[in-house]
Image 1 (spheres, rainbow, N blue to C red):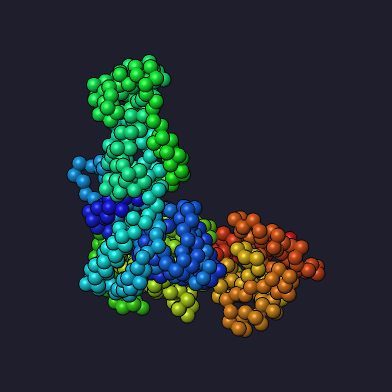
Image 2 (cartoon, rainbow, N blue to C red):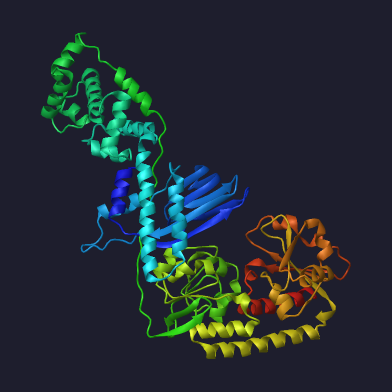
Length: 593
């Protein structure tokens, strides 16, 4: 890449920081491939391999990686690895006369992928740690400070990149420039254009060429044109005008002047004397150039991201106490983004503006509660802060205290930890307080109690209390996950709402010991199976049929196998659990037919 040009573009574009944090990979672990939600700098500490858009980057102690939004990243850790991440957005410049080609080119040059081993990693690490610490402070003055530290970090990185420029793969740049000259010497090329193709400045390209050929790029280009013209003069009867056009000159006059200047002889005389045997063209330089240009070069990948913004200001505001202190929120939030507790929001008659697609895909039962389209903000484990920013929410509800600092820079943010509430009523009532929908919360709680009472009545009439039930998830691992009462995957619906009796071993190892779930081998499935085994089956996992199927269970004449659609049972919020319980009753009844 052209580092000097890259720095110049950064100098003219302010960055908006979206998220700063550190994640860790244990030795031998893997970061599965996912699209990067925003432009991101990664400072890697440790040993391992990273693939960015399938291009391999090897980290041996320290490494810096830059990714554009949408690039696919995965990693494997040979030793414990720390990945320090800075996600940022480069707002589009304001243009009075609309976008132009130059602006689009600038964007594409900034949204790029590259990696390097830093010469002085500790300087980058020290400022990165200060960034992470300062990022957690949400006061206005500290927000200004974190931006200042970021640009200091960026300056240090660019300084190291410039110092290492001489050690960058210059051969690749020369080969790329040579190939381009050979393929386009019939065009009116400039050295500035050739340098841009080689991803470097004209000054640096000149240094590389003089080191390789003891000649400048302009001299090499002239020699290429001269030799091509000489070949055409000898091998064809083309006019000087035609030959001039083939080597980048508009007319016969300028071509003739060029040819005589570099060869010492006019082109017509050269043709006559060569035909008479007085001139044997010197092809040594051309042979060398062709050999050098045959080397492989890497293509520079760029991405252009168009962004739009459209929103509205909330009417009125109020103060609300939260686990992280008092904050000001809209009087009645309407543009709400959630990264987990989608069911609690839907229960109160409000469809979130944005939510992770993984939540919606993992509980399709919720579709009946969704009145409008929900914007995708990414994976619930890898939120796109850039997308959240684009949505311009008036309130963000998160489960993750570590994400609070990033979210609160976008909109008022509340940490809602569903597991901290004693029961479903308290959790829904708190969400009603947050959204200023307490009346809707009370109505939903009453409806919830009525429906749960009806479900348990059905279970008693069918005398289900005399049977045992086990919930198992065979997806996503070679082992089998046995689900307890407090876990996701249908556990709350089966044991909490319906009051199903767990198998003896499940009771002893999960309920007595208060464990959410346990993992068992396929060979041990029979030891945990109940009279009814409820098995989650995913349409995405192609291995589950080989790990667990009805033949796995020891049929004694009373054991039943029931398949639950995994895409209905991942979440455990009150709405999801209620809908899951109602579906379970229907499936259990069908199994008894």
